[in-house]
Length: 193
Image (cartoon, rainbow, N blue to C red; front, side, top):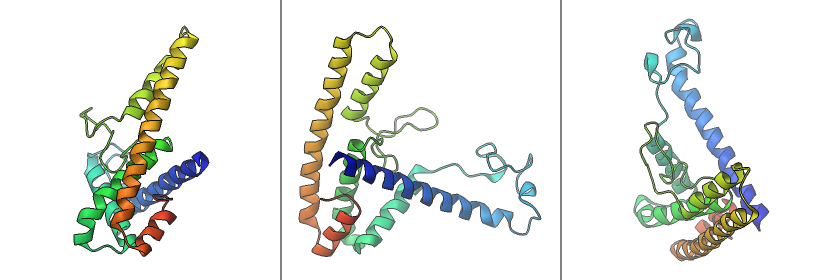
């Protein structure tokens, strides 16, 4: 069961990376056409890894990525806009909880648990994230006692169990909201068992 969730997390990461690379390629393509070379497209040699915001480069927009991912999921499920108003939040909740359990940060593209470039909070840090960070901090401390490590490990396991229960409830609510075709698609996507 755990290895399946790890695979789901890996698939989500790979799909996200693919979507990002396509979006970046599409974003850069119009500026490079008709300009001679890619080096002429941006000041300072126009290197792809240039300064964000310099020379017309666009910064990553998490809200736009979230919108794109939601739109793609809605299309895969064949949900109307009206259906998505109910279904969307349930799908996104299951997605976030699934990623938490698979070791990914919750809400990477759906608004949870991330800090922006300026350090502002863009979503709540989950209990699993707090427990994971506390355990990492304890493990970095060479002087940490076995009892301290056990305490942090127990806290992480407790948070994980609570997240599993939340996921089971969220999946139940989602399952009640979809038709059989949508349920089958959600199983293929790894969001339902």
